[in-house]
Amino acid sequence: MATRLRSIPPTIFSEMSALAVRTGSLNLGQGFPDRDGPPGAVEAAVEALRAGRNQYPPGPGLPELREAVAEHQARHYGLELDPTSQVVVTAGATEALAAAIFAFVNPGDEMVVLEPFYDSYVACIEMAGGVRRPVTLRAPDFRLDVDALRAAVTPRTTTLLLNTPHNPTGAVLTRAELEAVAEVAIEHDLVVVTDEVYEHLLFDGRAHVPICTLPGMWERTVSISSAGKTFSFTGWKVGWVTGPADLVSTVMAAKQWLTFSNAAPLQPAVAHALRQEAGFYDGLAKELEAKRDLLVEGLRGLDVEVYPPEATYFVTTDVRAYGYPDGMAFCLALPERAGVVAIPSQVFYDDHEEGRHKVRWAFCKETSVVEEGVRRLRQAD
Ligand code: PMP
Ligand code: GLN
Image 1 (cartoon, protein in one colour):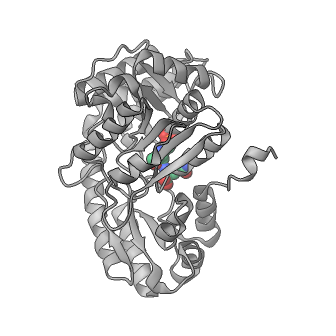
Image 2 (cartoon, rainbow, N blue to C red; image 1 turned 180 degrees about the vertical axis):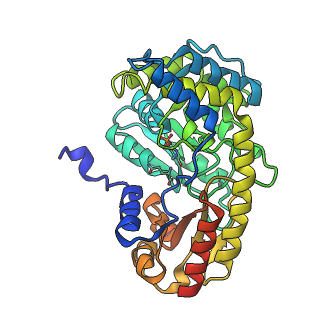
Image 3 (cartoon, rainbow, N blue to C red; image 1 turned 90 degrees about the vertical axis):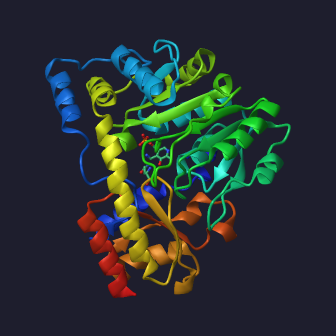
């Protein structure tokens, strides 16, 4: 195995989903919905398959999908994008992140990243030979510590990787926090890569603010999103990158060597979803909000500290009262204790003290599944 891979552990999501299958446990670990996205989009995919749209599409994506992404950015955020030069389709947000990191991070470059980090960030920065500079969002409210952000930037910092709404904490960066990030990025001339895959899944009337809409940020920001979370098609792996033409073409320079192009018949289907199915994600956010409440209430009855999320699929808890050495030990014992699987968030931290006892629970499941999870946890308590 190449040296650069040896220090990167296998992804926790595969490990924990395999544990759920092996033990027949309820999987509140990996974040994927147990219900499909809009049927109209499935129909559009089937039509595309039958219509023979089965050969390589253009590397940057089918024009109709790039146009639909541009229309979405205009509708929601008032952005005017040229679909031919400012949008690139990718294999989910995961490829977009990899391509963006390979595009902008030289060996030895430092990238500022919000901690806890989504796991692929760490792996891609390592593979690029870069160095991560964490800025920790701390419990209980996971707000951005602007002094810590400023302290994380050094002369070797070239890029900043943002994630809002944030996985795993469920925090949504406020406009004031984003303005602080923008100030630092502009002052130090950083390229900002922003992962906004949960852009439509916010609760309690909150609004998502893309950092690229702040003054001075468009020209330095690459924004990433995906149909996985917005349309509950996590298995389709269709994502996209948007931004100014020079940055997007640099991402494309890396992307062409990763996948070259992406699943042809799914692209018209996602274009259809973006154009016709906005009602789907509005409804999904409402349903998730109710399930968030259900799980938060259920967890509050246990011996855990609960940090209710502002968005996403996930609730974070602190499980130290159970007396396990860490969240990993708790999660490995949980299938036998309660027939439930969760994610030990410590794998998303360099700060071992802050991460040690944190456990993440997914609520992007049918209500009956969330209820059953709570019932099992209570029974085992
Ligand atoms: N970023 C974050 C924060 C995520 O939670 C996920 C999982 N959806 C991804 C990126 C990867 O997205 P995709 O499945 O579209 O590759
Ligand atoms: N984004 C999903 C999560 O956080 C998992 C995606 C994956 O398995 N790579 O659970």
